[in-house]
Amino acid sequence: MNDKRIFITGGASGLGKAIAMRFAREGFKVCIGDVNDERGHEAETELKAIAPDALYLFCDVTKVKHLESVRTELEDRWGGVDIVVNNAGVAGTAGAIEDVSLADWQWVIDVNLMGVVRGCKTFTPLFKQQGSGHFVNIASAAGLLSAPMMSNYNATKAGVVSLSETLLAELCTHNITTSVVCPAFFQTNLTESMRSHIGGVHSKVNKLMSRSKITAEDVADSIFQAYMKEEFWVVTHPFERRMWYVKRLSAKGFNMLMQHQAKKLFRN
Image 1: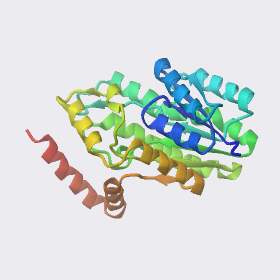
Image 2 (image 1 turned 60 degrees about the horizontal axis):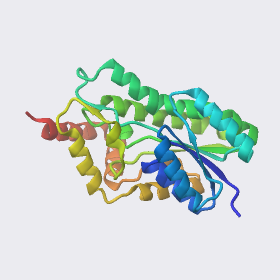
Image 3 (image 1 turned 90 degrees about the vertical axis):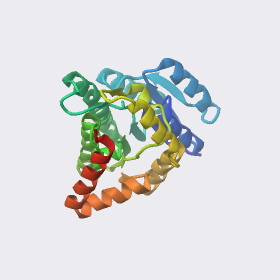
């Protein structure tokens, strides 16, 4: 019988919930954290049908005391935790660099980047004490490709990639492993948190998500497989993976492609 334990921030909906369900089906004890109590309790009920030990805990990743409270609860209840998925995030603010306010920048940084930092900082001592642990940090293809008009979102996700690369090397001697997940568009509720200075951007993003052949469940399965194989990179979408390879092989060629795409998308 599987006695592994997993905690997922932003676990009440979207990708977080899909991850919770995927690991629950593998016999994991699952704890989800979220700021939406209604969704959290609904997800907990669904999870308990698969994993009776599943639980929901209110957790705002902008508050380190919430993460510390979760850590204490899981130590008391389960004796620790094996995987921490830093998934909670917001869609950021679409717009030109001069239009996006510094307050919007601070909001996105506090959730998308510092939320992951707080999660890693809070649970690393427990992982070291246990002698093992695994972080799954949810970044985005945006953190690899840096599309125009999404500067604050891109920057935070690139920060998550860099943090994850750092932890991969820093924590390896403690038997602590890391995966960084970089999906592109798939159907989720991310646009609920999107702010914009560009007309119609919500409908455009929703259309791109609805057209994706890759689902949240597909991404969750890729994360599970990466955990089992101890893989670091989880780049789930084929087109964006190819673009990332182009960037690594020819930065000049990649920049030309991105500029061409930007002129097509944002021409007056």
